[in-house]
Amino acid sequence: MLDAPAADLELMTLHVARSEPAADGIQLFELRHPDGAELPPFTPGSHLAVRVPTGAMRNYSLCNDPHERDRYVIAVKREERGRGGSVGLINNIAAGATLEVSAPRNMFELDTRAPEYIFVAGGIGITPILAMIRYLRAEGSKPFRLFYLTRAAPGTAFLSELANPAFAGGNSIVIHHDEGDPEKAYDLWPIFENPTRAHIYCCGPRPLMDAVRDMTGHWPDKAVHFEDFGSDLVRPRADDQPFAVKIGPDGEELEVPVGITILEVLRAHGRKLPSSCESGTCGTCRTRYLSGEVDHRDMVLTPTEQKSALMICVSRAKTGTLVLDL
View: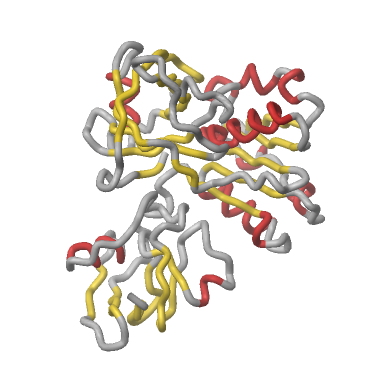
């Protein structure tokens, strides 16, 4: 789940055809057009912005086959310590209700030119990857391997389907439960030790993505793709300090307090800037900077790109002042 801005979205009202558990703490929602009409097409890795009962917009990945035009399927993890979006959906939206949603958008695009794929999913991060696998199975050509890592079987969405050998269709699917014990974590290093022509797609909690990023540093940048499911990127850290930003060398110096992002400060001072996920994973708010030492906290920019750009929704300054090229 990622945040979505309410502005600049054209919403359609869809009928909730199904609302049922997909696993412990995870609810599946099937959405259809109330008149039975075809829905806007989507590509593997796409998400919907959904207006939740609190009135906020939240993004949820589509997990059904992109070839389907009659329905959208999302799976929502109940986040008791979240901001109420998932809890409101699961508690209040039953079959027969309606939801306002955006047309699908994709910031985790599957590169269909790749000869093969390695998928790593952590928990609810299986949702966009499942759509990718369904697409590849329907196309019937590209090989893939999936490493699906969860805490325990009861909380593993789509477990029976993915554990069925027929679903793999000759490809490799590994499902691993660590029972919350770090000593039982799955060792991915043998998978990534020697680069291949495969493209890697990883979605899940920040620690998993950090580990995969560390293990794939010797792979080509364009072959490794991430999408975040969680708010670890935007939570204040214990060592965070206030800092300043300037819009150009001669611009006004603006303070960025602890717990407030550069994007929020600039908006408060009248700058209307594009954004979408606001968690450092989509790339929409990418901004050039002219000087300063950046604490990069996104999951998008390569080391080369970080020398001149940052994501203003999550990144901060390590020291001093950041001068932005706006």
